[in-house]
Amino acid sequence: MSKTWFVTGTDTGVGKTAVSCGLLAAAAAAGLRTAAIKPVAAGCDENGQNEDALSLQAAMTEALDYSQVNPVALQAAIAPHLAAALEGKRLQANRLAGLCRGVMLGGADFVLIEGAGGWRVPISGRETLADLAIELRVGVIMVVGMRLGCINHALLTAEAIRRDGLPLAAWVANQPGPRMDRHEENLDTLRQLLPAPFLGDIPNLPHWRASDIAGYLELAVLLN
Image (cartoon, rainbow, N blue to C red; front, top):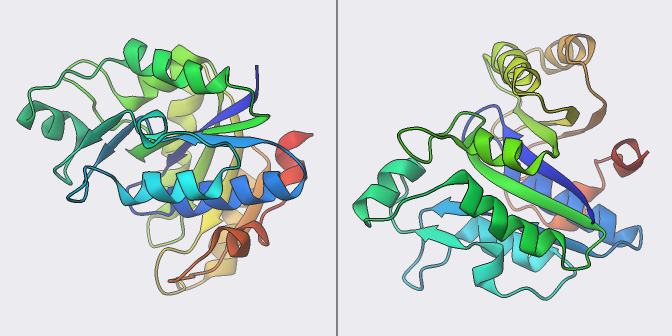
């Protein structure tokens, strides 16, 4: 089976997709076959497709159909469990895990599974996306949105991942907006306190490309 990681964030809008695409580009540049999955996406265009999932599809090397990349595409850009309820759909971690495993077994060397929002985003009244990662038993890459409150959010997310019995494989600092005050001091604090390898510090890139993001990431840290 391929090497697979679950990508989560300290909040919504912290740059999970940009980081995932950067990692895919870096892996492809290293000669690896890559694939990615956005199991659940809330917020789709008139064609029933999600912008983040399309970005992942464009960044990977494997030719996967959109339905494989994003098997559950929900129209409303709201919390997944609410969007699913509006459409009369029932989301279950074990079913989502089965869809993910289909891609994981497809022959790619490097696979990313991108969550939605943060670690505890509900998919139903009883489960969260964390339950999907737990079902798959994969390592977690955490994207830290560098803004006021990021230290607390990062430490709490890392603690929750560990309590759920999964390894925090690595983390990335991403600047989703204007550079925060005392950026370097906040970054140094996170590097001291987070018990995982650091992959890189990505500046604010409003019109990013996967190859641009890749240039800020130390992929070897993840693969070693």
